[in-house]
Image (cartoon, rainbow, N blue to C red; front, side):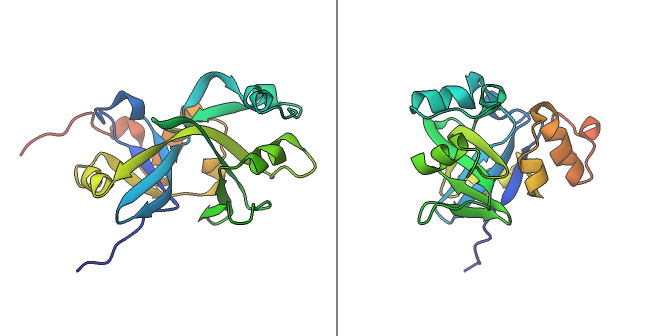
Length: 189
């Protein structure tokens, strides 16, 4: 029996021609990965027409300065109205925060939204995503065997980088890959 290798805390970088328009040029942080499932958040797709201020307003919470310019991410196609906050580890909600990778926590509670609305206790860095990407048992492993994704180390700088348009290229470059040299389709020998 082989040992399971979790990808939690790693990045998935979509290969060109992935075949699913929801994931073209996607950069996904895997937040949880076990033998029966995987869950991640897309880090480079803004939710059109939605800012942090809008979400806080819906939750009857005050919006801090700049919240109207803080984009909310489209975390993935599953449970698209559920919010997930990736944030620096200077704040942690007991029994609700999950360490994803060194320095980065995932929390999906009203308490973390309240922290985002209060500059006195807000985390140093944070991003709100609605929805998530999910895989059933063996699905992600199958996609990896089919070369749908590249896997890279995640770090706080890339996770919280606000340049969403270039995040895919930046993620590839962490692997030493120039996006201009990636084939859109595979060949046969």
